[in-house]
Amino acid sequence: MDAAACGLTSARISSQARQVIERLQDAGYTAYLVGGCVRDLVLGREPKDFDVVTQARPEEIRQIFRNARLIGRRFRLAHVHFGREIIEVATYRAAPSLVPDDSDANVFGTVEEDAFRRDFTVNALYYDPEAGLVRDYVGGFQDLADGLLRVVGDPEERFREDPVRMLRAVRFAAKLGLRLTPDSAALVPRLGHLLSGVAPARLFEEMLKLFHAGNAVATYEALCEHRLFEVLFPSVAAVLGTESDPDSLLLQALRNSDRRIAENKPVTPAFLFAALLWEPVREEALHAIAEGMVPVEAWQKAAERVLREQLQIVTIPKRFSVPMREIWSLQSRFDRRSGRQAFRFLESKRFRAAYDFLGLRVGAGELEPELFEWWTRFQEVEPAEREVLVQGLSGQGEKRVRRKRRRRASSG
Image (cartoon, rainbow, N blue to C red):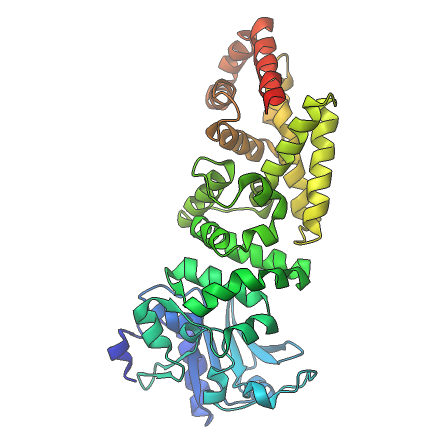
């Protein structure tokens, strides 16, 4: 198919990707861009990275590119390094029927067979920028035109083969504004329980792809629609239900994350998981306080239990779970503003994350805005004015804020 007829131009292809294809073709091999980069080019989007597929075997690729490094065990492929940019180069894979289920060997095939090993038709487009041609063996271009996300092959077989494909389906549909085909849409809620058999560490990586790609809100709503969120975060779904509340702390956090990514600002998994798991922690802690447990102990025990159960499904590495718990535990320090406490807290390395989280709680209606406004002002003014703000806090005022929060807790 002529690339121009697909609305595809080569102007946005990186020079490194073009160089890889040219050198492979000069060596006598066929080579194409493949996957998400071709899909995004057709849609007029900017590709995040470029993948190449070729008939050359991994060892042959390494002989052509001295800057190539072979990776993978089950299926070997090459990473060709150009400074910080990496072009991934894979060899055509054989048809599934030719690959033994228990084989770790590389079984290579033709470009046509490789297309049927792809997960979705929209990711199975092959583009030769030198010839200006797009090869489409599974109808991916038409599915893009129709706004459909279609599994290559039998959906149930492919989902059972790798349940993570269901998460990928939801992620691509949300990211690209596509609809799952009716057969896939009906299967996902029924087969979602298969995700419980996926390694928790792998699911953590998938969570980052789902929620840190710039379309977290749409992804969350799609996960709820297809009944996958309750499989991944059962304690959260038990509190929030299946209908998304636009004013909930979680939705606010996801909107903020999308905005930060759009502005090229950093996001952290610690804050993401603090927002994701906050509702069950809060509900359990408030219940324990209402039953007479000391607040500090109630919050600590609630955090431990919710996190322990969640880690059985999705791993959260300690480098993220520790600051996540600090964000929670620091919420109580916002009440302590007298003396030098406010000044010391402001210097804490977790202050900003805890402060942002406090803002989400206010937005969700958990707290009155007075406390958040005071801390906002405290950060903005000069040091001398900070002294005035602290001195202006009467003992009655501090007492009133704390008493109000306890009353809200006992009623929750």
